[in-house]
Structure formats: structure tokens, C-alpha cells
Length: 157
Image (cartoon, rainbow, N blue to C red; front, side, top):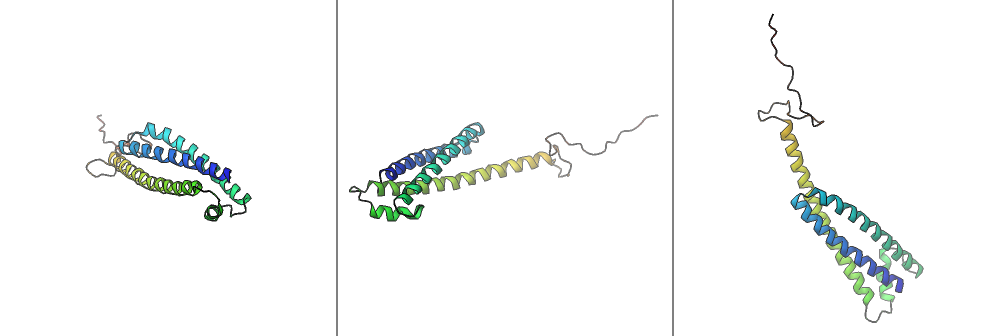
């Protein structure tokens, strides 16, 4: 039981760090700070890997204690737990609440990313098509200036 409570504390610490990082990510998305986003993405990836390892440890501990080795095993384990002050139950509920917060931040951040991608695509399209609406763009897909078609050069003899 102690290992499950310890794992819950570790998971709670990690999800709290992830939520804070996602809030920073949101600020960077709003301010279009791509350099900071690169660093945040690496940190998020590391946290998610650590969280997955903790969840796996929790599942193994649940299975070893005779409960379902999955999220479904938590409620029966908590009901059977002889924790007088219900610390494990409180940790679990807080973990679930912080997970919901992280899920909502992820949803909003995804919308911000999509908005930024749409804006970038509009700008790229504007750079490819001149103001007159002619198909010959200013820049080609390679980022190099596109040619405007055959030239009309006169040969003087």
C-alpha cells in the first residue's frame, strides 16, 4: 500500500509540473515564441515518459495487491485501503482533477497551434500569389523566387 501512495505522490508531482509547463506553452503560443516552444516540447516529452513509468508502477502494485492492474483497480483498492485519514483517496482525486486540467490545457493549446498554422498558411499563400490574383506566385514551394513565365525579349538585328 505504501508503494501505491508513494507512486500517487510521484504522479501528482509530475502532473503538476506538466500543467505548469502547459500553461507556459500556452503563453509561448500566444506570443509566437517558437524558440521557447522547442524547449518546452522536450520538457513535456520527458515528463510524459516519467508519468507513463509511474502509471505502470501503480498498475503493477495494484495487480500485486490483487486488484485490476489498471485504472479500474484504483477505486476497489481505495475502498479496501485502511488509510485512516484517506490520504490515498485525496491524492487520487487530486491526480484525476489535475489530469482533467492538463487535458483541457492540451485542447486549448491544440486550438492555438491550429490557429497559428492556419495563419502561417494564409501568409504563405499570399506570398505565392501576387495581388493581381494571377497563378504565378512570388515564391515557389522551394522558397525560391518563382519565375513569372516566358520573358518577352526583343532581338534587335
